[in-house]
Length: 192
Image 1 (cartoon, rainbow, N blue to C red):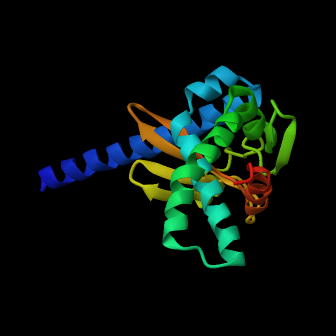
Image 2: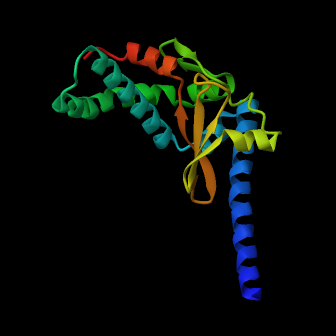
Image 3: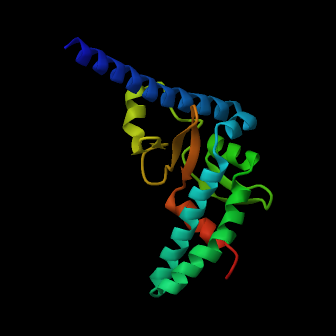
C-alpha cells in the first residue's frame, strides 16, 4: 500500500512540474513580448515550426478558395501542395523575421515590414492576462502530450499560439491566424 501511495505521489509531482513548466514558459514569453525583447522572443521560438504552421494555413486557405470556384482535382492538389509550399514558405519567412514576429506578438498586427504591407490584426499576446490561472486553463487546448494551444482572446478572430516541449523547455511552435487575416494573405500571394 505504501508503494502505491509513493508511486501516485511521484506521478502527481511529475504532472505538477510538467504543467508548471508550461505555465512558466508562457509567462516568460509574455514578459519578453511585453518588453519588446526580440532576442528573447526568438530564443523562445521554434522558427521552423512557426513557419510550417503559417505555410499550412496559407496552402489550406488557398485550396479552400480554389475549391469554392471549381472542384480541385487530386493532381492539382498535389501540385499546389508541392510547388505552392515553396511560394508560401518564402512568404512565411518574411513574416517570421525577429522584427515582424515581435510586432505580431506585441500588437497583434500581422505585417511584412520589408514590403510595408499589413494583413490585419489578431489578439495580442502582450495583452494576455496570465494572472487569472483559471482563465488561462480555460484557454488551453491540449494538442499532444508535448504540445498545447493557447487561445489569445474570445471569438474566432482572436487567434492562438501553440507551445511545444522541446529539450528542456517549452517553445512557441505555431501561430494560428484569424481566417480574415489568412484570406488577406492569400490575396497577396503571387499569381500562379
